[in-house]
Each structure stands twice: as C-alpha cells, then as structure tokens.
Image 1 (cartoon, rainbow, N blue to C red):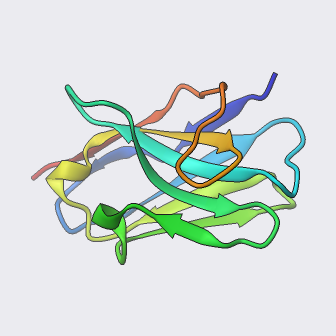
Image 2 (tube, one colour):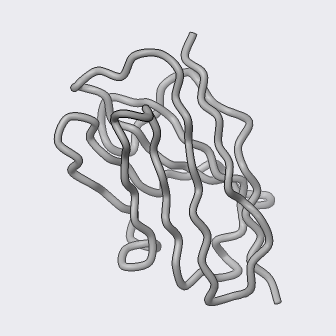
Length: 119
C-alpha cells in the first residue's frame, strides 16, 4: 500500500505564497508520474500539476501556469508544489497522488492539506 502524506497548507492572503510537500512511502518507478490535485468547496477534485519521476518533466493545468511550480527530491522520495500569486479561487484541499501519466490518478490518496486564500 502506498502512503502519501501532504503538508504545508495554511491561511494566506491573496497574492501570497505557500509551498506544499508530499512524502511518499514505497518505491517510485521511472514510469511514475507524481501529481497534485485539489478539491475546492462544493467542487469536484481537479488536476493541478504533475511531474515525471524519471526526468522531471512538468505539466500544469492552465489556471496555475506561471504561478505554481512542481518539483521533486528523489533522495527524500518527496514532491513539492510552490504556489505563488495565490488567488481566492485556489482555496481547496490539496492532494498528491501517484499516477502513470499527467492528469491521471492512482488508487491511493493522502489526507490532503487545506489551503485557504483570503484577506
């Protein structure tokens, strides 16, 4: 069973920044694609960003391009999401997940971390 633990969420003012972390237990293969997803109040869970474990190639949904940066640390088996210029519509519970292609998700989810953007 893969375990994923997200952290780093909090309350931030519009225009502010946060960095989320995801610790992954278990082996990550070169074919793995780690992704960040989010679920806002009353909304479906949506894809945010992804990174290929093998070569670090990154992918973003249009609404976060230029503001969010996904990265990885192979030694720590961790994935990060640097979020800048945050907007109220970024408010959501953020989850990381291991899939096999950008935008897809695997069966295991962590507890998520709450990000609230409000003045």
